[in-house]
Image (cartoon, rainbow, N blue to C red; front, side, top):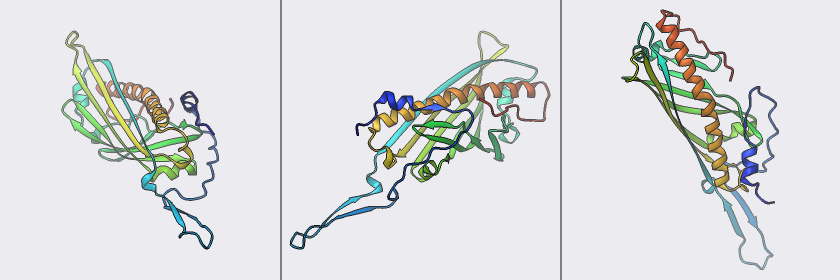
Length: 250
């Protein structure tokens, strides 16, 4: 069977809003994380039987990378934005209680929007740490777990991911009443290509994976920035409750 074209691969990716039923994963006749031995036996007079060995170490790898930088202007209120961005992580609002939960003072668990990759629905769950910096903070990924169908969950020990989001503010020289808030993010995923996808060229899988990451950043980061501005406005007006303002909706 011919491998699907790049257009077919790209058209199979879309972000989902409400979760739906997971598709049935393809049936695999052997576990991918074990060595498969296939013995080819000959007649009694033949040379000793040969063996064909497939190892998990020889599985093809794919790498997905996406970057995004967002900058918005924020009007200064009674309390400056820089003071807000200098708050210790222990005083951070979780912004959206439907999507984010606090683990400890500077660690948070984030539930990313569900999306579709080929025929499978995937929901990443991120554990991130916030590191305070002079004019903002740096959000670093500690771990990532995939939720979804049994096939999706089985990939959790076959990939690694890294992410850094640097959030900072600086003054607008042309307008002292305005500040600039910037989010600069890079995310990278390295994955062992599942057996069911190995007929597809690795380059096509990498292009599709990068497109998925870019779509996620395109939705998540502007929403994150908007929530940050709302929280700053509440804090600057004297609201010390630090209650989350998000509703979990796209």
